[in-house]
Length: 165
Ligand SMILES: C[S@@+](CC[C@H](N)C(=O)[O-])C[C@H]1O[C@@H](n2cnc3c(N)ncnc32)[C@H](O)[C@@H]1O
Image 1 (cartoon, rainbow, N blue to C red):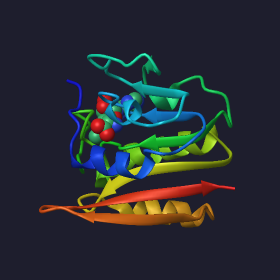
Image 2 (tube, rainbow, N blue to C red):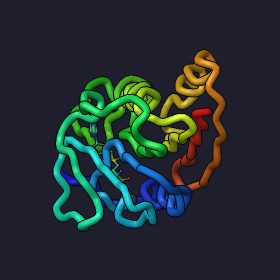
Image 3 (cartoon, protein in one colour):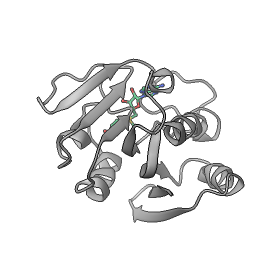
């Protein structure tokens, strides 16, 4: 089932609405975020096809970790990954694997390969996930990032921005 836009979707969109250049969204779901970004080159990838697509959004069906996309081909990569801790991945829209960050780490590794220099990666995580593991990974790789947060009733959402310089 296609993921319906939710608070995490809107938080991502609020922070990427005006980004420029070629934009790729990993796990784009309904393509709500891409549809509302001002860039004129937008590509989404997901394991589930959206119900409808705007003319200015290209869609690639499949596992975005295996998408045959050239290194350094997108200035902006965005994702709101499945981030709930789960022993197994049963619901691909929300189950993030152990600590809720296994899928995120895979998306991040893919993004670091595909992102242009200079370029940016924006992604969402939640206080419900073991986000510290992702921060440790970034620090170990000597990758600088900034972090913004949004308090919700039941969780805090984090928006990470990685500058690829
Ligand atoms: C939390 S939803 C976010 C959807 C959309 N980006 C949004 O913000 O509304 C996570 C999305 O990642 C997709 N997904 C999970 N694993 C994937 C993979 N390996 N390759 C492509 N998409 C994947 C799911 O199908 C789902 O649409």
